Structure formats: C-alpha cells, structure tokens
Length: 281
Image (cartoon, rainbow, N blue to C red; front, side):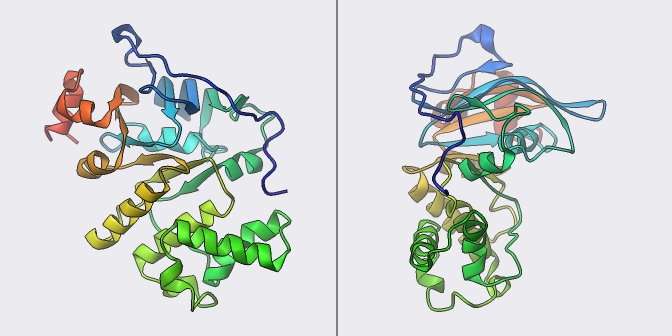
C-alpha cells in the first residue's frame, strides 16, 4: 500500500526548455534536466492580500534547488503550496504538476500527495514519542504491520538522514531527548520513511548551531541522488554551498532562476545583484 502511486501518476519524460528574457519574471524554467515537478501560474492570496503573483517554475529531478529572498518575498508561501500545506489558510490558484497530475486540483488526494512530496519545517517538530515511533507511526497508519518491514524501513530512513549510528541503541528513548540537530535529522528520517520523490525543507537549519547546520547540509547532499530537494533558506552562503539551482524571490515574484553558480556570479537582474550584495534583506 505504501508504494502505490496516486491514481494518475506515472513517469513523465519532460525536458526543460531554456528561459528567454521575455519570460521573466513570471514564467521561468529550470536549467536542463528531467522535470520532477512544476507550477504554472501559481498564485496565492491571504484574504485580499496577494502573497505570490502568478508564477511558473520547473524543478530538476535529483537536484537541490534553493529558494532565496528577503522575509515576506513569497518563497515559503510558494514552498508550502507544493504539498498543499496552505490549504485552509490561503487561496491558491494555478497548477502544481507532479508527474502528470495537478496536485492543486480539488480531486487530488492530499494525503497521497504528501506521501510523494514530503515536508520538513523550520524548527524541529518531533512527536513526543520514541525515536522508533517517530519514524514508523505514519507507516503503520498507512497499513504497514510487518515488524521486519517496519524495522528495515526504520533503519533505512535513519541511515538516509545520517542518524542511525547515533540512535540505533536507543530507539525507544523519547525523541525529545535528542539534540536540536538530531531532532531535525529525525524529522528528515520521518519524511523519508514514506519514500517520497520530492523533499521540501523550509529553512531547516535556521534554529541550529553551525555544526548541526553542516550536518544537515551534508545529509541533504547525500540525499541528492535519490530525491529532488527544494529548500528555502535565508542563508545565501548555504544556498551557494548546497544547491545546484537557485530561484530568487522578491515582493511576491520570482525575479531570477538559474544555476546557482551563474546566479551568484553573473546575475541577470539588478535586484538580484542588490540582494546578493546585501543592499537589502
């Protein structure tokens, strides 16, 4: 049951097309590569306040894409739309395409969407339960009962989050006893347990110390070959170190989207350059 896709999901051999200057800022395609997911004219309103102007973006498969920009620029709003986390708190128009399915459609199964598109939040939010339960609870709720399979998935997920060696002997200890960095890696393991294709992270290291931050970054780099990763970060050095591609958000618009090395060394848009140089934000 766990590995069954959404009803209409199937592989989509789509290719990116290069962006033209005329496409900016509302229709920006990613660098060349297979498309993991994309948005088309995605627009978000909080009440009568537009938080995100119609935005079209595509994300390369098995790469890390960073979303950067000042507070209130729309990047976290955009990220949360990708697995329907804005349901009930915002009005969201437009398409969010995963494989050949619009996950923003009213007919989409939101719970199934979230098994394919996982989410890790800004602050670690482990359940007040054991380390084991944090990883396996969702699996059991989805019908996995075999103890051996649960144990295998538990180990695989914790290894994927670079946490297994630190907790393998204390799996029944409360997750709340872990350090902040360990708790965040546990949250990553919890998301990985459902075997998503896409992993979304909203400033996952902002509440952590530098050592824990580097551990999170190392973990994400290890996961790059297996998952498509989209990460919101205020830390431009982190975006530069970690990501393959970067999208710059400003006042509810995506102003520029390019390979990270290109965006940071030769930005095409003046406001991007200003932000990178620290003139605002």
